[in-house]
Image (cartoon, rainbow, N blue to C red; front, side):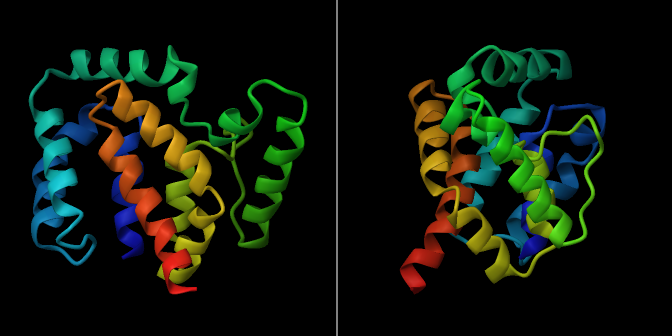
Length: 173
């Protein structure tokens, strides 16, 4: 299932023409592939319907309005913990160091707490490792999903999927 994290990463990243071109393949994987369970498929199919419902420029404008203009919807997860506080820097460094332990080197312009990047990282882990990784971020993911749901954002169900997978670690413990 780690491939599912790569799909979620693409869906939560800034929409572009490549994403729209890949929608038929993504829809097929969401329906029939092993990447997502039956309980996850409706959320994915609903989001894919949303992507198909608008031209690219409108999707991009909606993305910017959702994630760039509303701090409570930020995809940089440490922002929800620290805002612009000076303690955010050490948290970002710790996360970068964690990635390095697994062999992931970030480009200098990438912040390690960007959710699509975190999903790409999780795609390289085993399913148990990725669930444990997201388990550490459950409170933030819940808050982000709640904020997006309150705003009636089509992105809320995607964040809920990630939150749910992190919760599975707690249920198994």
